[in-house]
Length: 327
Ligand code: XMP
Image 1 (cartoon, rainbow, N blue to C red):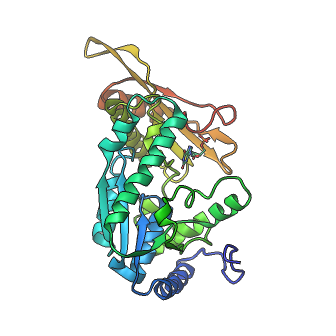
Image 2: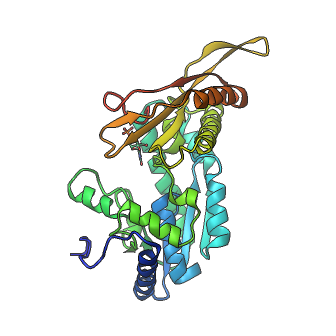
């Protein structure tokens, strides 16, 4: 028991079913935490955002959300978290600007797994430091969803939400209101809670964020090139009606240069790689072939608007042999 989805929980598909689930969870959360303080690491991803919104409806400012900006988020994301959870939902929001700390620690580190480890370690350090400043925390909320539980049970992956917790947080009682929901149900609940569509229906985004798309050792200027080109890509996909239709799409900026010409002058800049893919299981992925007009628009905008880019390439490699991310 405890970790098996109750048979009485029907698949949540409609706003009415979502509302019934929300009402029930509000009662359960209130009963579980009473007057206690709850802590949540809020990344701005679907699961943690829905979790925060749900708990906020139940206990308001008894919920402290810590949003760590590691500098590797997409354009506009930290601002959106602050807008939604600082204004629209009633929570105690702690925003931490840890950009310099992450980028300093990542300086000159080019090995992908090493980069991931550093990002993970510093994230836990920063979160623990902020948590220590919040008085009388008794509960730790997590946006664990049912596939996380199933996958950790099958030994496919360690339960990513529980894995790296610092010792003093392991004593907190867990609050996991969406742990029996599948991803599509979490989205229906998020929509019913009034979260913005671009938060609820967003594409998957890796924990190490743009860090694994700024190939090799991360530099601030190349990281900005990844962030700006990603923003243009997302904007143009939305305009072309591809948002929500293509499973994942992003840009990558490798750490090598090629020659070009801009305004009659020689340039020696980076290429920007576009990757757009579809999948059902993430084990195998197929490329999304882009319409010629969209490619033309992207090449034009990225090479003119993004500093340091003089060439655009498209990665049409399936997985296998390639992985989704370049690192
Ligand atoms: P790969 O590159 O392994 O990606 O084919 C499969 C899916 O996983 C995402 N991904 C990650 N997600 N932490 C994450 O939370 C990571 O370190 C990580 N690496 C890859 C990737 O974006 C894709 O959706």
